Length: 124
Image (cartoon, rainbow, N blue to C red; front, side):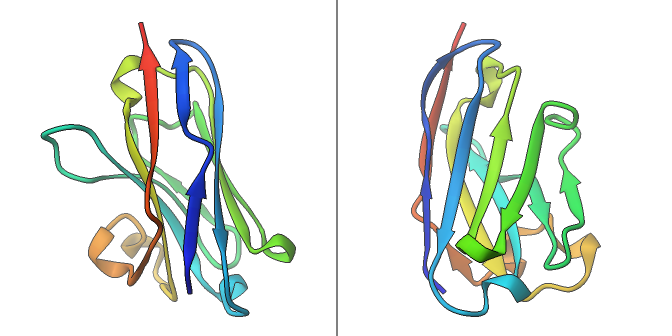
């Protein structure tokens, strides 16, 4: 599976962005998809994930502001980000793998397939 993340950009605090993660291959519908982010000089952290059957999981820091979704017909997952804050500034990565345990979705080591990252910058 190859993943292509897009949709990043510069936005003012309080604004919105929608990230997309387009996947190649016919097995996308059976894969979980996760979004992670990495700010300068910080470790990569979990943002949100969606299981193969649509269950969603969020980091506490984005709960209520971000929404993850998927469109299997388009082989694409999305991350709708609202009420953005300067601390959301980071490179955002999407990842996918055949993970079937919801509790495992927040761990980056569980994913074998990664997109290249898209930069989100939130100005104050």
